[in-house]
Each structure stands twice: as C-alpha cells, then as structure tokens.
Image 1 (cartoon, helix red, strand yellow):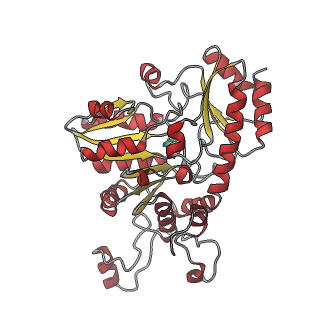
Image 2: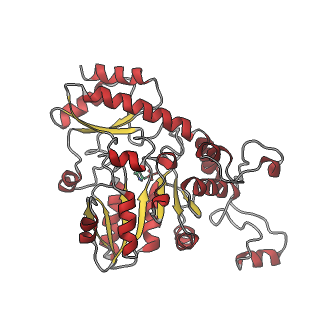
Image 3: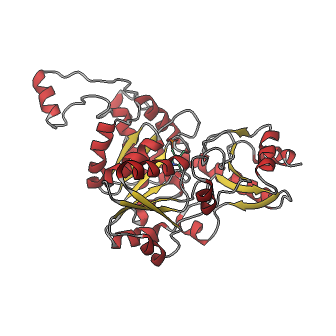
Length: 384
Ligand SMILES: Cc1ncc(COP(=O)(O)O)c(C=O)c1O
C-alpha cells in the first residue's frame, strides 16, 4: 500500500480483507502452537526458514499485524509487541545493556521504570544518572565512557515536563549512544520520536493505543531492523509476549486513535483552563510551550496540578469526586485521577521525587472522553 495519512493507516495499514475471506475485522489467531505438514517442515522452520509459524511466543499472525501497523505509525522498520508496557521497557533496556554499563535518563520516569533501573543497578551494576536534558552541554556532562543508552519520557509522567527529542537524538548520535523514548503519553498520533532521530520508541499500549482500559500491553518500535534483531532474543527467552486476543483488541483500539486523541486533547485544554483560574489550584502543568508545538501535534490528554495545602487537601479533593474515578492508568475513555506521591511514584524515594518535581499536593488527571463540561463540573463541586 502506498504511504497514507496517519488516520488512514490506523484503520488499514498491513491488512487486506480479501486475503482473509473478506473479513473486515482482522482474524484472531487464538492459538498457542501451529501444526507442521511434515517433520521436515518442522525441522526447516526451527532452522529459521520462516515458511511456517512455530509457536505463539515466537510469532502469531494477529500479533504481527499489530506490530506491522504500529511500526508504520511510528515510522520504524520493525516493532515487537509485549505483554505489558514494563515488559517493553525492560526488554528494550536489556537488549542494549551489559553489566557495568551506564544509562542517562530524563529527570522523571514512570515509577516502575525507575524501579527497573534500580534493579539493574543492584543486580548488574548498571548505574543511571537523572538529567534534565535542557542543553547539549548538560546531556554531555551526564555521559560516561560506559553510557550505552539515553532513556527519556516526554511528556514526563506525571510532571508533564518535556524533553527536546531532536536535541537528545543529536547528542546521543554524536557519541554512538542509543536513544529510547517512552512515547506512552502521546501515542504515535501526537508525537513520532523516530522521525526526530531517536533509535527506539516504546509504549505502554495499555494506555491510548488500547484506549478502553481493558488490556495490559506494550510495544517497542525500532528505527532500524538491526536494532529490532537485538530485541528478538530478549523477548523470545524472557518471554514477555503479547497475547493474540490483546493484539486483536489493540487493533480495534488503534482504529479510533486519531478521533479519540483529538477529543482527549480538546477536553484536557478545557480542563486545564478551568483549573488555572481556580483559587484552590496552585499550579497546572499541561504541555503548550514552544517545544510542545515543535514536537507534538497537540498537548495530549493528561495534566498535573497542585492543590493548595498538602497531601491531605489533595486527597480530600479526590475523595469528593463523583464522576471522575480514583485510579492509576491513563488514556482510557473514563477520566481518572491519581496521587503520584502515594500511588504510581510511591516506589521512588521522597528525595528523588522532590528532585523530579513530584510534590505531595500534586494530582495527575487523565482526561477522558466524557463531556468536558461534566468533567469540569465534577472538579468544581469537589473543590467547593
Ligand atoms: C509512561 C509509562 N511507561 C510505562 C508504563 C508501564 O506500562 P504497563 O502498566 O502497561 O506495564 C506506564 C504505566 O503507567 C507509563 O505510564
């Protein structure tokens, strides 16, 4: 298929219904294993002939369609699907790192990603340095001879701070270091890091790609096929594969990604404007500066804000909400609120949370697809 616009690729990329008895929806190959026609075919397949599927941890047609579509959406050569966002994060890091290596990461990371970096340090002596990455000199000051990976989130969970991806990719490239970007908060619709020169992009597909709060999944997309080849053995042998049914649900989710993201963004802009003028709100973080305009299509569906007072005042606002649900995760149709210091980032030590800008009175709001006026009315009554 010739190159199409993102909205069209979300629906059609990689699938031809005429090759599947006219089935409009892609078939679900819900199978763990595959039968060989002969013993010799099995032997050739295990030797790498690629003529037959072997076993669903090694390959599955429904999962492969999801991978093909996601790779095209991110502008990458190949994608690998995983059973969770954390399986994707850990496999991407393991693929490039060896004992004694060093990672530079954004000053702010999802709590479990931070937890995995701690684990790498404890088990394999792989140290990491948090860096705000505002300038080339600042990034270079954090590098060591053994730095192999720069890992960034942008927007950063939950502070919504941004990292200049072109700057990071340029600096990393100069030093032969791989850049990995967690693009979960944007989805490929809002931001395409590989097109800015980054090497690897990954998602918790649990969030906007799935979009309906019913799947835990992850995906890694590589700009070059050789990079994806480094990830293959990690996924095969660690085994964090995506299930065919989850791939099928994600393909369904992807079809509406563009329209959902447009509405998430529209609603979040309205909610941010409401919160900014509320006397109980100290500060609101929502991406809309020059960098946001340069590397993102729109600001996304997540925002953070601080409530005047401390943790208790923030929790009191949460407890008074009626429509908005208290829950971690984001990117769902429902609006969700959580308290990062005691929930998603509770594993991060308090002094590191402070350094990351995660305050005790900060709340993270994932703005859903309900009517913006109803979301705002719920926040208004909770803060009365
Ligand atoms: C930015 C980010 N990356 C990775 C993950 C991990 O994804 P999962 O929960 O699908 O393992 C999350 C989960 O919240 C996340 O917010």
